[in-house]
Length: 324
Image 1 (cartoon, rainbow, N blue to C red):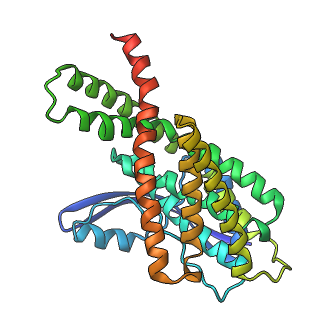
Image 2 (tube, rainbow, N blue to C red; image 1 turned 120 degrees about the vertical axis):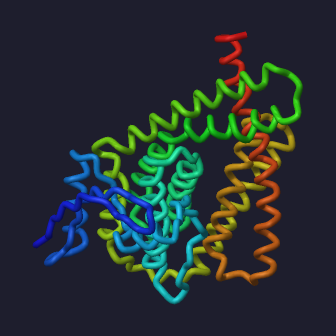
C-alpha cells in the first residue's frame, strides 16, 4: 500500500472572489479503495476532517462565475437495470453519500437550514435503500446501518425542527397579523434555531465528524458478492407490496382515530412507499408512475403541515411556561 499525503493551504482567487483552501489530500498510488478509506478514517477520527470531492479547479471556475454553493439535492436513485441488484444498490448508495458529504461540508459555513435538511434527506434515502435491498444484503449490515444512520440523522433533528417552526409555522402566522406578541415569539424561535444551527456547525467542525460517512463507504466496498440470482422485478414486487400493505394499515388506523401519532405513522409509511416507488421507477409505465407520485406528494404535503403543527404545540407550550 502506498498513499501520498499532501497538505494544501492557501486561497483560490477568481474574478474578485476568494475562497480559502485547507485540505489534506490523499492520493492512492498502490493498493485498494479500502486501503485509502481506512487511512482516511484513521485521520478523520482524531482530526477535524470531512470528506470533500470538488477539485480546486471546479471551485475556481464556480468562483469565477460567481456561483454560490447550493444545497445538494438528494434525488431518486438512477438504477441500472442491467446490473446485478447488489451493484445497483452500491451505485445508488454512493449517489446519496455524495449528497451527504456535500451538504455536511457546506453546513459548517452556511446559515441556510436547507443544507441540514438535505443532509437528513440523504441519510433517509440511504436507510430506505438498505430496507429495499435487504434481501440481497447481509443481515448484520442491514441491522447495523439502519441503527447508525438513524442515530446520525437524530443529531440534526433539533436544528431542522426549530427552523421549520420559525420559518414555516410562525413566520407565516405573523404575516398580516396585528397581534404584537407574534413577532416576539418569532424572534425567540429564531434565536433558538440559530443556537441549534451553531451546535450543528460545532459538531461538524469537530474531530470524528466524518467517521460515519467513511465507515459506510468502507462497508459498501467490503460487501460480499451476492450468490443469489435476484431479478429487479422479484426484488421490487414484494418490497412495494409490503410498503403498500403497511400504508393501508396505517391509513385505516388513522381514519379510525385521527391522533397526531397515527397521522405521523401514516406519513412515515407513505414516505417509505414513495421512496420504494421512486427507487424502482424504471419498472413502471412513466405516466402512470408520475401520477401516482404526484398524488403521494400532495398527501404527504398535507400530512407534513399537520406534523409540523403537532410538533410545534409542545415546544410553544414549554416556551409559554418560561415566558407567559
